[in-house]
Length: 84
Image (tube, rainbow, N blue to C red; front, side, top):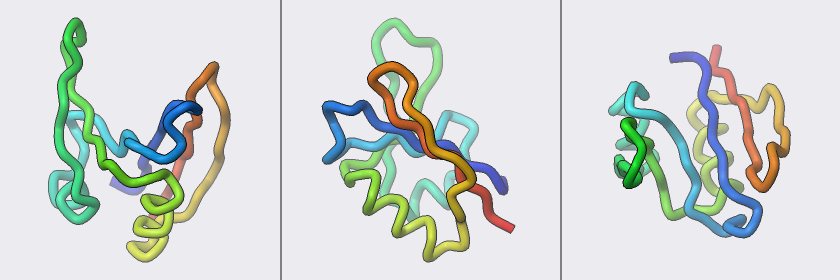
């Protein structure tokens, strides 16, 4: 998977960081130390790490990912990354 979205809520800038959905690469999620969670009321799961987004971005850069774009959506910060 060459594209990856990560996000966090503004009030949680120190973590946790959402790093993938239920279809994300399990090997990559393992490298990041992510755990799969399902929120009550949602019919899908997401992967989270307790690290701050900056730490996650540093790890992903070392794995060859580069930030393509970043935006704020309401109270959420979202980064789109790509790996060649």
